[in-house]
Length: 125
Image 1 (cartoon, one colour):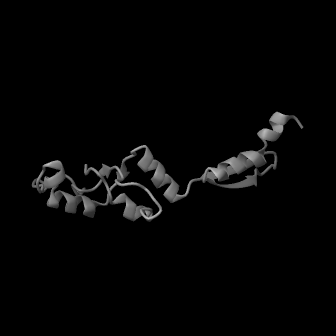
Image 2 (cartoon, rainbow, N blue to C red):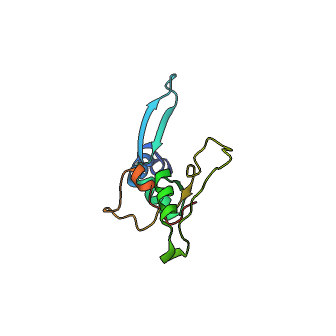
Image 3 (tube, rainbow, N blue to C red):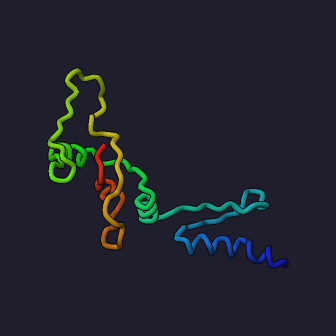
């Protein structure tokens, strides 16, 4: 077997994926002529990457509403904000579908389940 074949063997490739924190599962195709591999990333790994690249995540609407009602006068110089749909133009709550960036650093103490971590953001809206 050539050196290149050993280096890029399925076993080594899967090992590299596992070392990088990804999870895999493999199975043969129906005709058993191909190997199908599923690759997934654990939630905490996705959250760390979202924080690293400042990827905006969907915020909990209750958190958005509370943050807007409280305002951020001390740090961002804006007071309480109330969004009212007085003409009932949509059935969508005005605090839904807001995205923001995770704040703080993602250490082991800060890692939480997805729904809790989605509520923390540096920006609202």
